[in-house]
Length: 192
Image 1: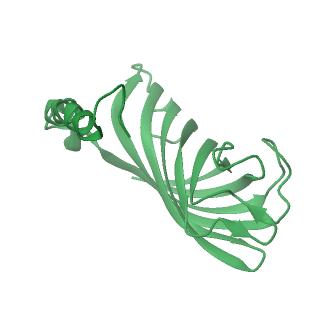
Image 2: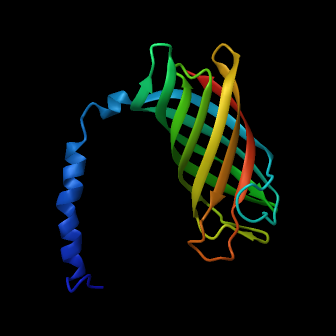
């Protein structure tokens, strides 16, 4: 389909230099700035709806997440401040006797102590579901937007305990007859 009277291939080739500039402009030390902060095991403890319509099905979710520090942070000399990280997770979503693999990547803003003992985080990203229909509930498609809010504290040495709110939704992209779901999860964390 032509865009503003131009053939499709000219638009694609026009974007190529822009993409190449961004790829080449990335500093080579960026990978050195990434650092594994923690691994977490999570399980749903409740699914009381906070955002959107009530989910017609009951779900269980279990997953493993890895939290990688991103290079953008600002901490005071006292060790408290804010930072950024990337939370990547993979796990099982079960509902109506059906199972699905769920994989998500969520950039987050964190507030708390620099070593990560006390932490409050907030993020928005995306998730892929291997199945999006569970009984009468239709998430709308394999891609879901994911919103999260978490809080955590120390339990013993490097171990921590936390609460995570997680919301999946297609935001109406696949029509108005889809329903997302809210998950309240307990999180066991190991800090590096």
